[in-house]
Figure 1 (cartoon, rainbow, N blue to C red):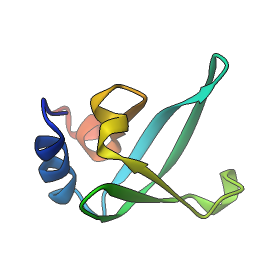
Figure 2: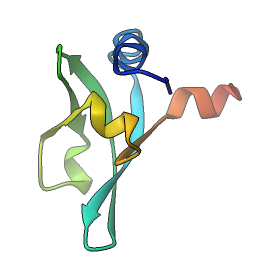
Figure 3: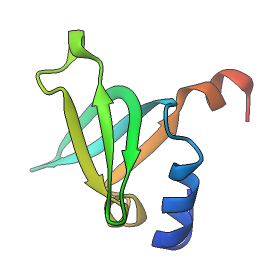
Figure 4: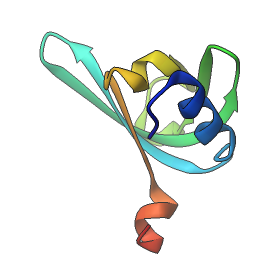
Length: 84
């Protein structure tokens, strides 16, 4: 994604409204996989609106540091479909 927190934030700012798949570290060797839409970005966090039928939560938030340290991996679905 990016090498710095600012790079990650800028990359996510350009993709607000895009569908994504996220893989997050759930602790104790658990991995959580979710699909949703990047809803908003803020100075320290970003919000993902999850698909209602497959998740108990409506929205989740993560910090840019989570992406930087690979605690959260983001994959934008439109980029996979277009082969980028």
